[in-house]
Length: 561
Image (tube, rainbow, N blue to C red; front, top):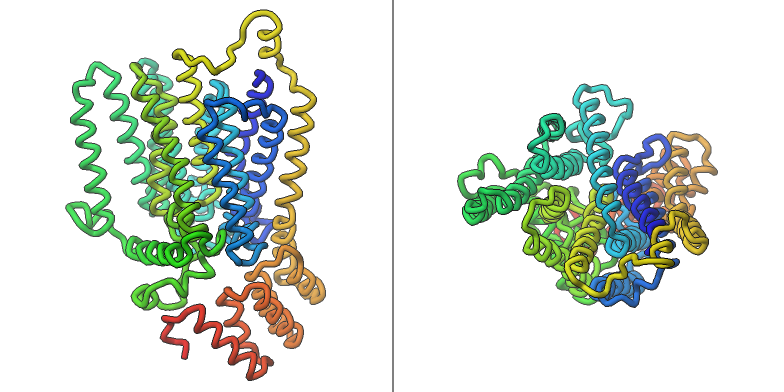
């Protein structure tokens, strides 16, 4: 690609990651966290597709072939699951409420991943560094405001008030842990500069302070894991490299001790174990069961919540009561296994293996400490560790996917610089002039604009629907409530909530009609059938059918007879 196209991709990728982290819409959408982040990721992903489409000669280059084949297989399988799994297509495309990790999200993340691989440049590396540190700094500032109890936004949050822009203290602490890991790696590359050293050290200390205030251990574990990677890789390039092997051993032992401690064993069990670990085990087992029972096409994209009640064990049902459920496995690989069976999980693992292989090859070739690349490797490792015990929150996932692509792109380019013969370096005459042009080619401008339009067309329906849902809550405009309830894309939570509002306004007939329509569109949504069973004007046949469906969806619930 020409310099202008590489610069465009750098700005798009860094801007998308930054905005997807901090952009929230609490005054405009019923889901103020995930819907706006899906909007940013979709716009960024399809704009990158526009740039790539205008510069598609990379498709013929052998150095990208393996990665592109894996990504194309991943996207193809996403579409196969979407069309074949049999779940509600609207939910599969836009994602479940509170998650938004459907086909549109993963297609957009895949496009960002490819753009980072193909569009790698030193400028992109630098911009991602600045974007991650800046997003971390903004999140830190907002976290401090929340610590002080001065948050201008009244979040509906039952946990620690320190949730940042990610809607949950676990996500906030994990993201701050990731940005602090990068800061540590950069600090070790600036040991001779006291001012920069002090700045990075302060950044980490404030990050750790806010992480502690979230009351979430995830951030501390993420930082500890990433810091261990940074320190081990730093030691092997210094005059203390004779300590590298002991460092590897200590890191491995530390990983084992922490892991067994979180599972309530070993010397750190009293510090690390929480009841939530047991609950995650329930979620994991349910997700594995979904995948094993639907091994080829899974249960459908972002459809874990529809199947959780019927997939969980009796013990999981009784542990915290049958009404406590989850719409994610809290493990990204198991989520993919549940969504799309063995094919989707295997392809995703293969993509991550390509990233791990690239990390290994670059580190093996390196004789000096590269603080920025090592920092991104450590961030990627920490993100993967976090993804084992958490879910794909879009504000975190965007960094995981972009950095994954960036690492592969870095390895390909560093390989080429060391003697590969496939990369087209700028030469003399017209070639040098072409590669040095700063203006975007007209085809690239058109492609970027078309990508923007495509992304907007695809994501705006769910943004508009979420905004309309927000606007009618507490409203007395009955016809507006009814119109919003049926507006596309339909959503089981919206239809159920607005049906209850109609009941409260003595509009039993309209409420029953709405909930009946909801059961047709979302027959696997337990809450919809529960509302039907409790509707005061439902017929005996409707109540009996609703109870039968509830028992089908939650067979181990002792409260259902």
